[in-house]
View 1: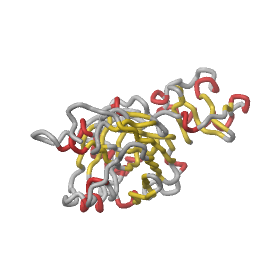
View 2 (view 1 turned 180 degrees about the vertical axis):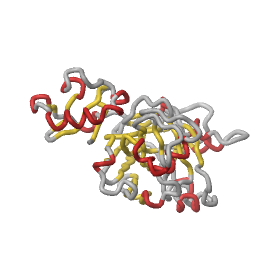
View 3 (view 1 turned 120 degrees about the vertical axis):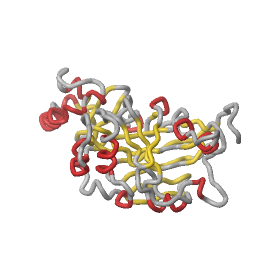
View 4 (view 1 turned 30 degrees about the horizontal axis):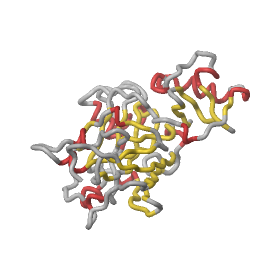
Length: 286
């Protein structure tokens, strides 16, 4: 299934359009996407038996962030070998984990304001948790994933690396810095969920391209490792890491600028398109 967030209401893709899930189910299923994860069996039955009169055509650009209100948002650093090498680090033996803030979430086709001239791109597969997970085994990791989406972990590198210690959470959580969407795609839609192509381009120039098979810690292992430390809740979001090709690792460095168009994709999952616009922010160097 492909599930979306349309003006705060959960919808599911069907032939010729989408169903508003709450309306089509006559109130049996919830209105909000993040309340839906543990009712996927009922949702599948609705898709199979829906009334065609409930189908509505939409522009995909109207969809907001997949999993719009997670309790917890995790980012995984250095999770592709080629990215660890380009960043000058050894391949990690344990996941490098940071947090992002929900206020930075936005949809897949929005304008994003640049707070400085030091904003970098990071294409990522986003995994959304589907049910409460505590100390799950790696073999069972996929069973706790509601679906996958496309994400960008945008990063203001001065804020991220400034101060007496790095400020990953702040540098990666400016307004609009966590676009996710347009769809949440359940893993049964994907022939090889462990081997998806992902990439992004700026103004049509490819800057990143990789495959999820090259993750140091695959998604089921991330779910398992995180769940042995914290409780994962339905709707929680994991940004699973980025492959090589970031602007900060280039010589000369290359950062996003006013009027750039950033296009991001994950094969079989979806595509995002964002226009970047400059804005001033006191206290951030440019």
